[in-house]
Figure (tube, one colour):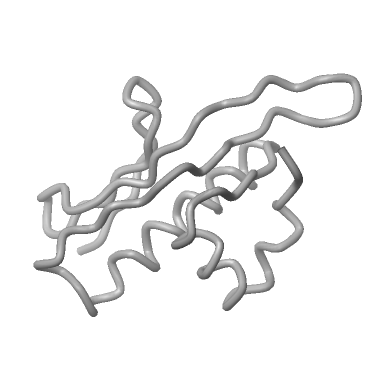
Length: 99
């Protein structure tokens, strides 16, 4: 089973497969200002090559973006993997803002 959870102490979303951590999407938080809500800046993503092709990276991206949406935040996408995921899943495009 694939599980995605936020680990705010390490500033990342972690993905596990059958209880074993196999990847992370790292982020930095940017505070809200007069014109923008709090933003999650996705900086880079790592997924173990041992689970390549099993949908783990996609599940990580989906889970992280769903959490951003649920929190009322917006996403700044620096990470190429998250950017590619969003380009293939336009339902997440509304979350993306400039830094």
